[in-house]
Amino acid sequence: MKIEQFVAMLAEKGIDLTPKQLEQFEIYYQTLVEWNEKMNLTAITDKDEVYLKHFYDSISAAFYFDFSKPIQLCDVGAGAGFPSIPLKIIFPSIELTIVDSLNKRITFLNHLASQLNLDHVHFIHDRAETFGVNPDYREKYDVVTARAVARMSVLSELCLPLVKQGGTFIAMKAAQAKEELDLGKKAITLLGGVVEDTFTFTLPVEESERNIIVIKKTKNTPKKYPRKPGTPNKVPIE
Image 1 (cartoon, helix red, strand yellow):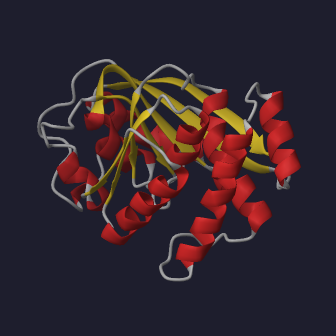
Image 2: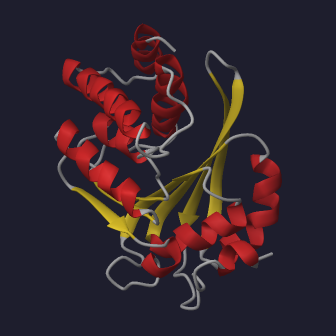
C-alpha cells in the first residue's frame, strides 16, 4: 500500500490525515525498522506492507467503533504498538495504556512515544494475567483492544477483566474468527461479556480476510479471573 493509497483509502472512510499525522506515521515506520534490527518487533519491514498490514489494519477498528470521544483505552500484548499507537495518532484524545510482557518492547514504545510526541500514554511491563487482577487497572478501561494475540477464549480471559462495566472489548482477528468465537462464547459470557457485533471485511491490496469482534461488558468479571500466568493458555475456559 503506497502512502497515497493509505491517505485515499482512509479518506474514503471519513478519516482525513493531517500533515502532522502523516509525518508521525513516517517516523513510526523509520523507528520500527531501525529498532527491528536490534530486536524482533515485526517480521514485516517492507514499507508498503507496514502501511497496509500494520497501520491501515490497526486503524480499521475505527471503521466500526467511534474512537473520537475521550476514552481510556488499554491494548493488551500490543507488541510494537498495534493497533493502539496508529489509533492514538488518528485520535489524540485517547488516553492509552499498553501492557506487554516483554520489557524490551516497552523500552521501544517509550522511545517511539517520545519520537512521535504522544502524550497521555502509559507503557506497563507485566503479564496480562497479573495486570488484570491489579486493583489499579481492573475494570478501569472504556475500551480494551487486542490484535491476534491468542484464541478468543484465552483473549477474553486476558482482556475482559480490564473492561469497565458498560465498556467494550474489541478483538481484531484474521480468518477463522467465527470458529474461534463459537468456541469462546462460554468464556465471554462467564467473564461478563456479550457479543455485540462481528464485522468481516477484506484488507485492500492483498485481499485477505479480517474480522473485528465487538464485545460489550454487561457484568463484572468474577474475582477468580484472570487465573495465574500461563493457565488461560494451558487450560482455556471451554
